[in-house]
Amino acid sequence: MLIVANWKTYLTLRQSENLAERIVALESGDRQLEIVLCPSLIALEEVAEEVVESKRRWLKVGAQDCFWMERGAYTGEVSPGELRGLGVTHVIVGHSERREHLGETDEMVRRKVHAVLAVGMTPILCVGETKAERVHGSAESKVRRQLLAALKGLGKAHRRELVVAYEPVWAVGTGEAVAPEEAERMHVLIQKVIGAPARILYGGSVDKKNITAFLRQRHVSGVLVGGASTKYSSLAALLRAAQSISSSVDI
Ligand code: PGA
Image 1 (cartoon, protein in one colour):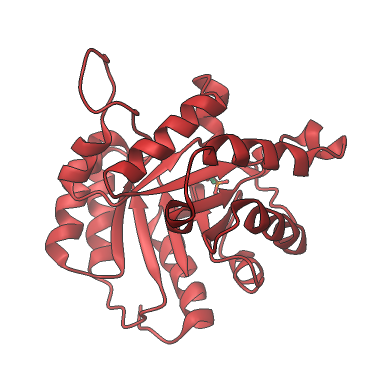
Image 2 (cartoon, helix red, strand yellow; image 1 turned 90 degrees about the vertical axis):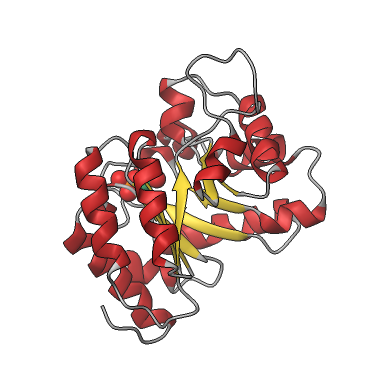
């Protein structure tokens, strides 16, 4: 079971360090549970150092984005190799906020997925439909299209290493999560399109009240959490809920 905490641009460097410190201090004996902290770029080095030094096998660090080229004249970008050098193991790719605000295209997302895999990290590929697409009955075709574009040229071995996050755009940051059974239906479709046993997360307004219902779905292997992962009390509550499903751990 995988819990990805996407801190977006919510926390300052100091707040990110503090939150990471408190998570590192947790005792987890649960081998089924893996937690990936994704701080903003500015806090990545400090949080990664904290996590790597803690030697907590259940705790990892992820980046919220990266570029697809390793070196060159790409002002403002950060390469997969540089992230890897910090101890980063996961990279969120194609988040809907980047697709929307930064104009990230399916082709850019495909390049990023390949680049992340090429240096041995795990891409967390985000896909999902808008409200209008859902209303018009094209949610499935949108998700299928985004997936096929991102997976183009990837062999089975690489597909297996992928993490895909199903994040309906209208559910991200709105407090309006999709129905868990609806997420399950989409996850089944995603699994079919991938054609390999990759892990599929649900993301979009996950909180301590609904997390259990999502994690109980057969094809939901975890959650990607934004807002509710940015405060210790609510992140700890999410982890407790996940652990009570997965096995027993003290938090
Ligand atoms: P949210 O964000 O949990 O705040 O809806 C989820 C995400 O961006 O992945």
